[in-house]
Length: 79
Image (cartoon, rainbow, N blue to C red):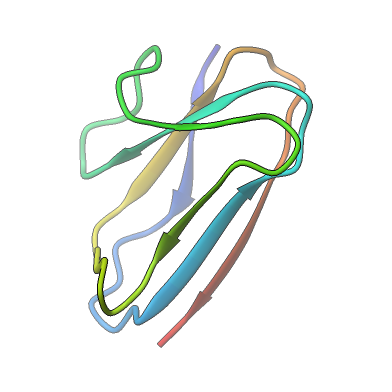
């Protein structure tokens, strides 16, 4: 299935949370290269999550790919 951009690069990002609210797994990829297959951070269905914090900073683009075309993620971001 195709990839999608979850967050664009943002130099002022202090916090972000990405939660897989769907029923299929999602893999995140950090950086300019798009997600392919599941070569990144695995988010389990029904609540798997990844947080960006001051202790775990990342300011680049984040893309995602799911194992099915029908899944959802929720994203929160702040400076």
